Image 1 (cartoon, rainbow, N blue to C red):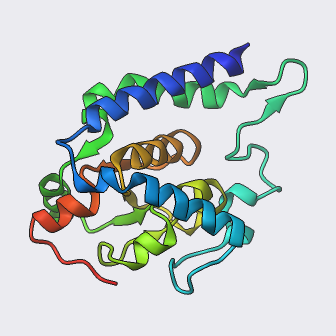
Image 2 (tube, rainbow, N blue to C red; image 1 turned 60 degrees about the vertical axis):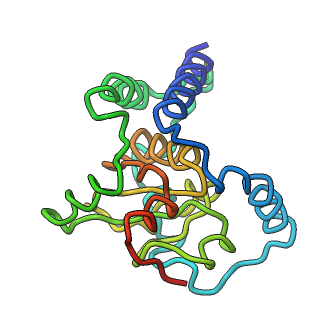
Length: 205
């Protein structure tokens, strides 16, 4: 029952983040069907793009550490399949802190201002590998959204995380996952690569 309540709560939060992240209609949104098809093709063909990301693979991820007493993945209690109280507390903190933290959304200008004062940031692009390869923020890691849990250990420890994707909704799901299950200080870069380029910032391929 508690698992169902958490799931409903996280879904409600995702809807709230979608509304908060909503921008003026962008050409990127028109391409979402193409992106979805590309993601399906990647999953079916199991293709990977060499050097599409940097960091540690699943084998060395903190999520895969079976020696820890408390895994980063929620612990299910066999009696009721309830999530551990630790993750209930983290989810509660995430929800209660959303409004005071601007719903964990930064404009490109806000991100640039923060990183000018503090260089200890990692950038994660949650787009499909083909989208990432067509142009991304310099130094950005590519972790497609569906692989975030298994590849979370690639994000350098101790760094704040700025996330963007083809649409802000995907980035919002990633931020939620990173904050609740990864214990990371994560934010959405609103508008993604389109807003980044509109601000006159460079992209690399």
